[in-house]
Length: 512
Ligand SMILES: Cc1cc2nc3c(=O)[nH]c(=O)nc-3n(C[C@H](O)[C@H](O)[C@H](O)COP(=O)(O)O)c2cc1C
Image (tube, rainbow, N blue to C red; front, top):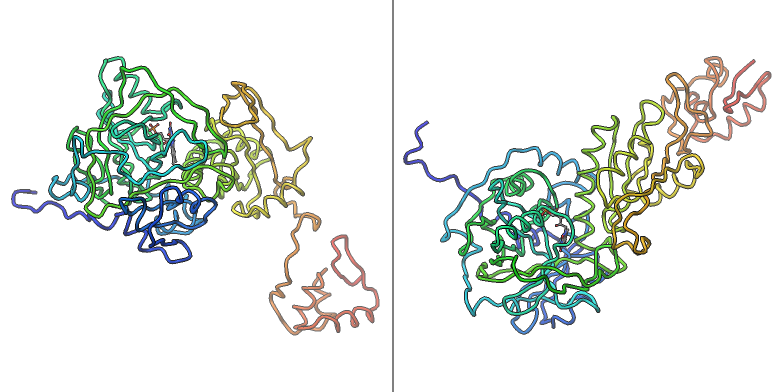
């Protein structure tokens, strides 16, 4: 087809704006603080808060900022147009959709409506608050990093916090193995600084994409997870392309030649402080933003991890990775859920319909091995709701024998932020097989393994009690249904009057 004269494809530059998502949230999901707030009061307003928070006038600059946006599975699900239970399936479906990326010119890119360079580019003019009492400094916490991998030319996307160190300097935590760290090492070997762009304030799907580590151009991952064409624009001081509809972009480089400097301590995603580390730092060259930009912060630590952005994001990523490992290990996986209360990666629950005995253990092995940060794996039958703490508690209490159903393995690479590791380099993992005894084909479940539920009185008829019993052994509920009883006590009296009435091992009535 001849493309001459064809208009560029239309791309929505507002539909995936962070502000637009917040506008969809009702008061049960979003609390608005319209009065001025000091940055010193922001952390207290977020601690343990189940809702997203929008501050209209934060700090002396009266900046608009939001936080805790992704700190609930419900809000994450709303951003993906689904339910908390359907979220993983929707994310997996979108991951398979081919991405479409549309480059827009700088004039059209909302995120470049304001360009600040030189002395005007100032990290300390952004509404960045101290998150935890002993943090080393205020941290930019909802920063999505975009960098180009020199080996492939692809864009790598991740989330990395930034510790404010000055107007144009911030520490970056890059101690954990990651693709960005590998890219940084390549630039270090070449003796060049690593160009990077940090996006702050973006659609929830962009944050989910940033947590994934896949061998693809991760700009495409952002587009796939949005489920829509992704408008991108080139940064003004380097060749990195970023979402053109974001709120803020911090452009600059990570210094690869200066010695690393102390970074931290910082309240970490397991609910304890991470120690001071030696990390490289970011040098700012420009800030670009929308003219009415909305800053974003992510919650991470404390006693209510389930109400933090970090745990909810981690959990979804863990579920996606675990699901793909399970797909090769077993069949019959009915669901996977990682609990946010543990920081999002330590406890993974799997609902499994076992086809043959032992599959629960295969599932445990697959999930234990697929991610370093998975510590405990719980496998249940499909009748257990993996999203319900109460049902998991019940299954652990009643379907588990510690000397038979516990799988303990040691010597795995440790997650050092876990205080129970106590300085060791390896740690233990455990699997809990919470499935009921396996039934072979043709074996019916004994009543002692059936879960009581209210009677359903299915197939209501108006037969006589004798006729119903003549059909074969029946539970009391079945006798009520067969005779059309809406009470039951009259059946007791009729049974009492019957000659030759017997009970089988399951308690069903029959006539000899
Ligand atoms: C809110 C949040 C903050 C994070 N901060 C950091 C961080 O400061 N340093 C880090 O190494 N990983 C951090 N992570 C994890 C990485 O973003 C994640 O491992 C990502 O997949 C790395 O991407 P990459 O391997 O493509 O570079 C964070 C994750 C979340 C959800």
